[in-house]
Image (cartoon, rainbow, N blue to C red):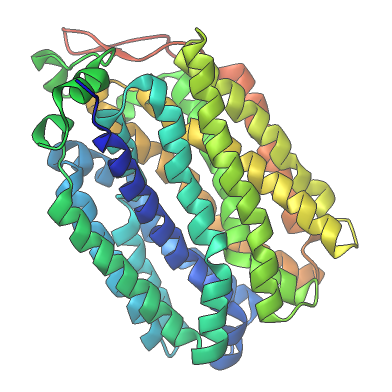
Length: 431
């Protein structure tokens, strides 16, 4: 029987969702110069506005991870994207800093289930040897939504005003949410379009949960006993710090620091995000190739996460070069390296966690990662205001990335957390 390929349709759907997710987030950075003039915001106030989304987004990660594990991805994701898209559109109604802070905080609640759900879907729908490229593809949505849509959004802002751009991107998300609710199934076994050959392929090598594992009653904080968990938690923090600095500030940085027009900044912003897209897919593909060549999954993910974060350190020299083309090249290498690591960071969650806690660990990882969303936008604005340049802000992102390389090397071990029948966890704990 020829194997069907419904699993890749599912991967494409979550790639689209991630692209919409980050297009909504990036909209603020693109509309930033016009918003600052229209409402009268300082760089520090705009940084605070960029940070507000992450206050609720990060705080909701751990409960949302557990909700995804209990309710399943279909309802969780469908409701979530419609919620965040509506509040993204409501940004157009903002008339003051306080009102915009509230709207962005409510938008953050809606986006909270996205990455735990993506990780759970890939864990359920793909065998381990294909999860790297699958995670790379959905991670590519970060780059597509953050950067490749930038010229279009910049054109909408310049032609129709910044308020219109939020209405348009919000409408796109609502359409996707309705598509997801009508077409997705929580498990491949529930989808009639998945034939027996594909179902057997997906299940091959994926150990099913026992009744004891499903009912072990373990909590999210039990996972903090393990060194692998601490390694991936800080690793995503470092990746997200660079990501959210660029997501919030790149177009504005090019306008303010490199003296470009908004439309020119929009087009030039595409280049680093193209590099990020290539890095995401290449990193996932190479980690899968290592596994197919006999590497243990955790070791394969660790390799490309470490290499990617070493490449991300190009952000440090980018802070000092005076030539615009050189700065964009170094920023592109940095973002490409970060996204090379990012696909592995999400794939490794299913390699480390017990199957019934994949969403929970993904939520924990995204919580810690997105604490950087609280810090990076506002700290970057503060440093730019005080020092009248972005040098210190870019160097700080590089220092945080360098620390993640050290922790990957020191903490990550080829050991999966296993659930004991007695209700405990079995793995090396942090000594």
